[in-house]
Length: 534
Ligand SMILES: Cc1cc2nc3c(=O)[nH]c(=O)nc-3n(C[C@H](O)[C@H](O)[C@H](O)COP(=O)(O)OP(=O)(O)OC[C@H]3O[C@@H](n4cnc5c(N)ncnc54)[C@H](O)[C@@H]3O)c2cc1C
Image (cartoon, rainbow, N blue to C red):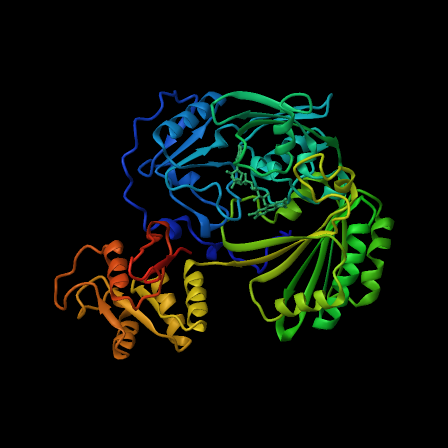
């Protein structure tokens, strides 16, 4: 089982907990009276609701927010009523399906209009059409289709939501043989900003139909249902091969992959993953899927196999469609991780210099990978202006620069490290976790920190940070937001941050957690304190 996005093996025990990201939950501001909707239309979830946390996790914990209200909508009517309600009350909101937005565009501190209450899947085998509620996840769709011997071209992660995925394009291991997920759209049902419910297709609301095919979610309205064209598929070939190579050989292998992958028969879709390995070496792992013959697949991979001896031999297996989905999904559980990624579309083959530069950047970096998805094939059969997704003919591959980590403390330590490198003083409180990590990273780099205690200066709090506090105090860098010997008071992050701004030494406050993302502007020195959310 392998997940294309998994960079390092992660133990389930280590995975970030939802609580890590919400432990500093903000006091919730009173909401205006809620729209008059029945339980068959919507489930309202507020932080005090026992089921609130069941719906909270975002795939990227770095972006996770705790909304004052989540409205899990079950009908178009509920979506329209929620839109009218947030508009008339001037509330900020986000639309959420699977919660896999890399930058948390489905997260809001105020209101989340959540479409996961609409997740029905109706397969019409005779017409090869499937009607899907906009809150369904990819795996549930694959499962419903496989039961009828059908398949849909979509991404590898089981818990990605159909809405964000298809509205943004959608690339998966059947992309070169069957196109992008958005190429399967026959009709989208949508609710617009005025609460109007309408269908967009090739013959109706054609501009919206065009925009829904790769233009991105969260922009043109809230999709409530998709009608998609699907196709019969029983078995596929899944393959994987790894090389562990010097940088120079890895660069040659990458060049061989880019010559093969975008130009291979359209039956074959492959991904290459480049990571650092021990001893300054690089692993190059090529994985993928084919709906063609094994002989064709072996012939396609032959130039790569001839170049260097694999460290893990080529494996080719014939699997049923759903087994292939599970193989690449890695897990069917909802996983969350701290991550950051950016992508480029490569429109012509990269030169040797560019490849070497890229590989050198990956060498020695842990938790970092280059992930490249091959384009071409059926993706290129659609004209660049026929849909909102323009990366068609000529696009070679998409290159994703991906980095992930397990804990918020790692974010704080990383930011602290970067600040010290730029000669900037790091300021933070002394709470266990994030603040401690920022302090320790700063001291380890020989940087300056300014520490703030939420208690009287002569009290070590939290107790397990006593040694760190003593070290900071011995360097004359300890400040307290309270007078010495004052009795402990309820910690106020606002007060603490304001104090730091006031001192003017604190340039950047390293913190994590949504409610700490308060920006202070000191009119005399606008750079006095800027809170960095992690
Ligand atoms: C672990 C992981 C694996 C991934 N694997 C792949 C892959 O194999 N292939 C691939 O192409 N991509 C992949 N992606 C990217 C993924 O397709 C996008 O992030 C996609 O937008 C996620 O959709 P979602 O519904 O899960 O996310 P959400 O965060 O819920 O939504 C994403 C965006 O769509 C909007 N939106 C959500 N629902 C609606 C709606 N009903 N109407 C209108 N707008 C809506 C949101 O407001 C947000 O802007 C992966 C991402 C992750 C984190």
